[in-house]
Image 1 (cartoon, rainbow, N blue to C red):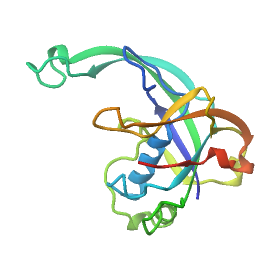
Image 2 (image 1 turned 45 degrees about the horizontal axis):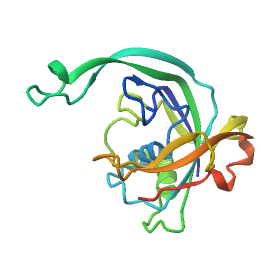
Image 3 (image 1 turned 180 degrees about the horizontal axis):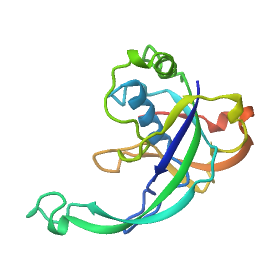
Image 4 (image 1 turned 90 degrees about the vertical axis):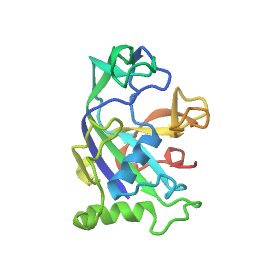
Length: 209
């Protein structure tokens, strides 16, 4: 199952970013997996563990910086976003993000129907899907503008996210939402390849908890 996804504004925060919220050049596999679960209306992130996804960047997004108020937990004396529990920080944004996303069943994906089948059914019969909230990629305010099946007219030179132990991108493939100790990471690099060729085997990421 191959998808075209466009997001007007997005930010994929670098894991080690603290005072200055730098963005990654592309969404991590874990973020794309979360978007697909939201698309099909699946609230249990464990339900489709074992599915495999691949990602390619179709655009070179413009990068900008905004100053925004961010919440943090500095003191228990005040509530969220009050007093010391808020501060201004700089955040990088990406504008006009366009992606190709592939999803296929993995050998360890035990659910039925598979995630790829549910995505296909959602695009074919959206009125039959029970879901809630806006579809976003990353932060809840970074809404997806368009998601559809990939078309031959979309084919162009693209940058594929490829697994490489010596790659310069360390991305989460499974996040630990309570802390960070159990977050699973994978090294990647971006490889230029024509979209019509599809993802090579190293471009596929299994979602493993």
